[in-house]
Length: 269
Ligand SMILES: Nc1ncnc2c1ncn2[C@@H]1O[C@H](COP(=O)(O)OP(=O)(O)OP(=O)(O)O)[C@@H](O)[C@H]1O
Image (cartoon, rainbow, N blue to C red; front, side, top):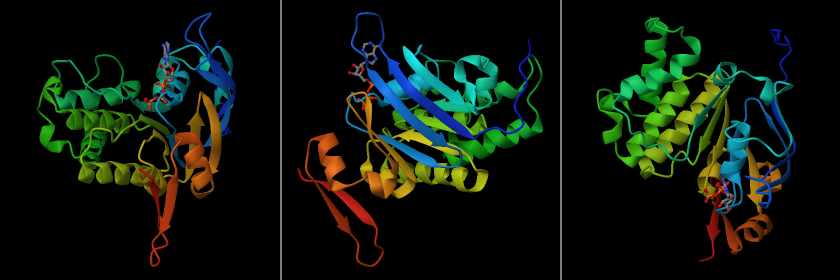
């Protein structure tokens, strides 16, 4: 039977008691995760290596089967979405963005439009406009004709982000989207995501290792440790000295600029 969309979509992604172990007999990697992502926010997921950030994204994207618990999007169990419906709602920039394919950058970014295209139908003017806008936002226009397998690490990361942006979904999920980028491109990428949140009302969920970048751009933070959520909420409330030092097991100083009042999070190395 064909499921009808509820007219009043909740605008939430709700995770309840989520646990995940890769196979029977193995220890749980995610343990009782409870969390609500609200539409229109910019979320940063932070936490040390191995704390379960990518595993959480893999469960959300249904790349793996959750062992216990539920994930609902717009009040509907994620398992009930068809792959194509899901692709019209959520896009992902994975951690590993190397592409071993004989396609041009333009073709790969155009693949972001697939959820909206019928098989064998040509790209529309709207598709082309959206693709070029996504490439502009991520500084990929000059790479348009290049074969994706030849891209540098940072270029490939920007192209993967362009493809996700071209998918034009309400939810954009990114796993360490600036890990291969130089400082200017890091700022450009984060500004592009902020623009999508502010001007296009997208919801951004990004795994980030740079606490100062997370503090600058994210309205909310989910802080993970040992497969659990250690703290979540408004950025300033989560990024306390105590939370940071408990989670990263290293002391932190928080410095404030007298004029701008901007806070800087400095690990005591
Ligand atoms: N399929 C799997 N089988 C066994 N262990 C796994 C599997 N996937 C992940 N893990 C383990 O789960 C833990 C969490 O991994 P995950 O990739 O989610 O961490 P992360 O927080 O994203 O780390 P990082 O910051 O290093 O990217 C790690 O110890 C990892 O080795």
